[in-house]
Image 1 (cartoon, rainbow, N blue to C red):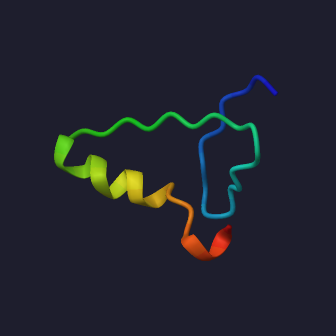
Image 2: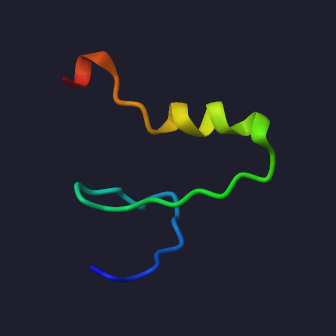
Image 3: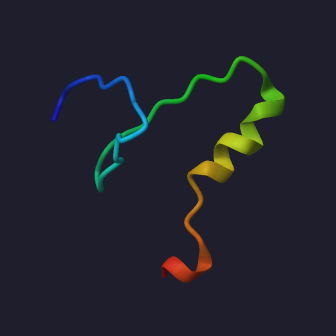
Length: 43
């Protein structure tokens, strides 16, 4: 799939999707990284 999607509340990231996130402040990077972490119970 080669398309740009503007995410909404019901957008689902699927396997093999690529996500690009732009942060306006470096201090927000750890919070964004945490959003994409898989929980231990997921494995």
